[in-house]
Length: 304
Ligand code: CP
Image (cartoon, rainbow, N blue to C red; front, side, top):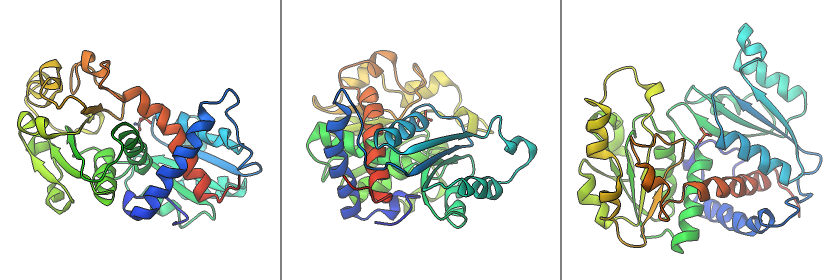
C-alpha cells in the first residue's frame, strides 16, 4: 500500500479490500469494554484541522487512541496560522515534534498532496476543499458491505450537491474500484463540468432512479461553498431532490439510506427519513472510527 492516503484513486481493489477486511477484524475491539490495542504505542499522530469538523476529527482521534498512539490535535483557530504562518511552516513545526502521521483537513483542494512533499510521516487526507475525502468513502463502503453483504454489482445512487462534494468524488472512485454501479442525481447546476469523465452514470430524475437503487446516499447542500444561486429556492430543491417519506417508499425494501453528515434536515433529507430504520447515519459514524483505525494501522505498519 502507498505510504499516504490522499485520494480514493490511490487505492487498488486489493488495497481497498485489505482496509475493509482489517476494519472488520478491528470492529471487535470497538465492541469490547476496554477499547484499546497496544499496536501504535510510541507513535505520534497529528490531527491538523484548518476547516471545521465533528465526525472526522473526533473519530481520527478516537482511532489513534484505541491503537495507543500519542495524539496531537491542532486547530487553525487559535494557532499561529492567524498570524499568517504558512501550511509549510506549520507542517515543519509539527514534523519537528516527531509526527509519524499527519491527518489534514484543509479548505484548499490539493493541500494534503503538497503536505506529503514536506513531511516524512504518512499523510492522510481528512477532506480537502471540494476534492476528496477518502476515509469517508471507505467508511461508507464498509457500512454498505456490512449491511448488504457485498458491494460488487450493487447500484448506488448519490444525490444532491455533487459540485461541492469531496464525499461524492471519493465515493464514485472507490465504489467503481469495488465493482458497484454508481449514478449521480443532481440539478445540472450542481454537477462538475467534467462529470462525464467520472466512472458513473448521471441522471436528473430522482424518482426514476430510486426503485433501481440498493443504496441512496444523500449529500448536504453546502451553502458555505456557494457564491451564486444554484437553485431557485430551498423548497424547490427539496421538492425535486430531497428524500422524504414518499420517496423512501419507492426504494426497494432492503435499500439503505446514507448521509455523510452533517445533515440539513428538511432540505436534502426529511427528519423522519434520517431517523428511520433504513438510515445508516449513526452506524456510519461508528464505522468511521473502525475504518480510521484500520487505515492508521496499515499505513503506520502497526504490529498486533
Ligand atoms: N462527514 C464528515 O466529514 O463530517 P465532519 O465534517 O463533521 O467531519
